[in-house]
Image (tube, rainbow, N blue to C red; front, side, top):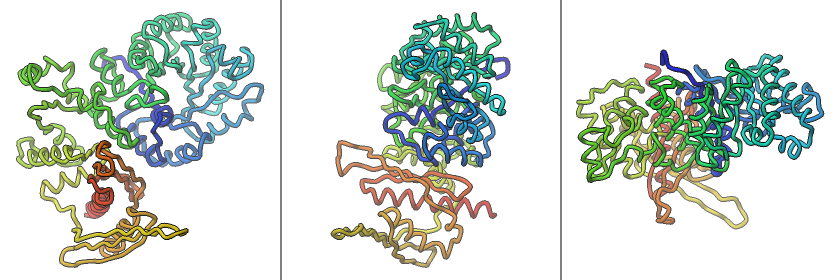
Length: 529
């Protein structure tokens, strides 16, 4: 990235993204995504609004335990309330109690919001901005100021909107972020307004952009802002967000790098954008958008005929960037090409050096293609992928074999439902037969498997399930549809994901559960060697 202009990436997936219809991140989800974003080299991660709900309070407590290497954690909140002292404001107090090193505070730029939403005067709104930013700075926090509804505010009253920025800057904000909160601004308007802001505030005042996608141009607006000197882009992974979403960082980042020569995250991390995109969609329990630019499964897919023939002769004929540049891969629908380079790359990340010419690589590629064709997805199931990799290379990650299992669910009139699981497994030459109850089929199976194994493998006591998600893969099949189950587990130090697929939800759950236990035991024993 040496010599390239630099833009900061500010991720708000955990707050703005969580406001998307159908998204509900658990605490563990938020922590896993945080680790992934930090691994990607993102500069800022907005964790949520302290005090808005117990989950966000817990997040800021737990995130302090993560050994983050790159990202700064941001707490999000509003300016103080009208006609109140900033020292006594509950929102400001909770922002400080979060202990986040960065506070992103938003204030009103639009006179309509000041008089109608806040029910206060224009002068008092300016004092609210000044007091809040100044007080937080005095408490030792880095302050990012989000100028909410700035572009609409500028259109209504340009002088007042500019004044709100001036006040925030003079009060000590590190950067001023212009927000298209309603998502109705077009790229040429962004450029025109930012030109005026730059002239009025001076080139020494750093600006950022926060764009919503209600007009379908959030990414374009972010690019336009960078063209006009913005040094920070706020957005979300996959463009998740309220209404029509936010600027999609999986599109913004490669556009900046490949089209504009602007650096953001480390270059080697750009090759992991595909992985990041699919990881977050799995954690969100949403079907991934195959047609996303760069990271969609169809982004570099070519059908038979002229296109396929040309692409095989020279990829540049129908590809604007190499798919490997973002971790994606080319697909020819008539004769699928293997993703050998991706397998070798992922194996290397797991500490396994593979020669692309090794026949075992071809075998692994074939297994993955067959599994994905059946419905498996490994982006959010890193442990299942590693088990498949290790066993293909001849390493034992099995520990036990299933002989049989049975689950009984009994509902008695006016009584709670009772679930009982019977599991028979083979460990070497021994057969262990156990029965256990649970709150549901998966819980009962988990209890029965533990009961069978804990005597032989005491390390299992540290492993527990932390999340469980189910997705229907073929809705048209109704109750006969194929089901994908994603399980997250932890041993207190690390979290891993496993996957199972079947038309039977219990069988799919068992596959993911068994992989979870196998991986946890293998990892524990491997560290002890």
